[in-house]
Image 1 (tube, rainbow, N blue to C red):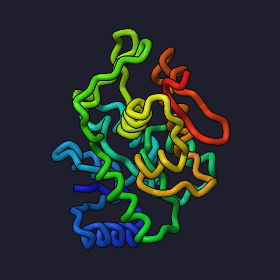
Image 2: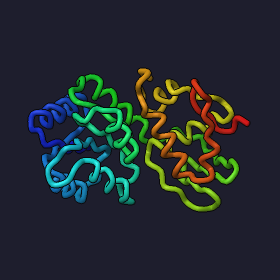
Image 3: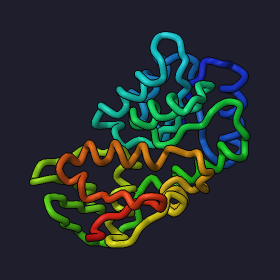
Length: 223
């Protein structure tokens, strides 16, 4: 079940209809209080959040979802009219997995929703990885730096797994977007860069393992 938090009745009804018509189950909520009541009863498979809302804004809802142990890995898309690069960076920095601006194309939104759901769980290879102070076990969803557990969002976790599974290889932004988000790099998209920045920050000293290859992309274990 996908939960949509959107106070515009027309947009809310349209998106819920489009999701249900695409073979997915969706329910819309006008206010955060109703959204939270629904989450309390049943955890959704994804949340789509507007930013400008009554009661509390979507960024506050995003933060609370990421802080809760029950929903910290929940796939989340921001769907909002706030379309500047700064707004996108704030949303992605806050833990959103994707950011779609209004007005939006129905086919694009459905593609992004389905791509995010497909990538909700990384492909298992049964391996455990240890590089310097970093330990990663994808199957058990364990990330540790110097023995201390590290909490990552779903996309940060998938990004780390992707880089480590391709250790030593430079992965372009286009490759990363295709693999993790399911769509192509358009030359202006800051999604990958923002997630790399927050991933490095959360990994602490192990963040230095992620190397920037100027003009190309990123890699781990290139030295």
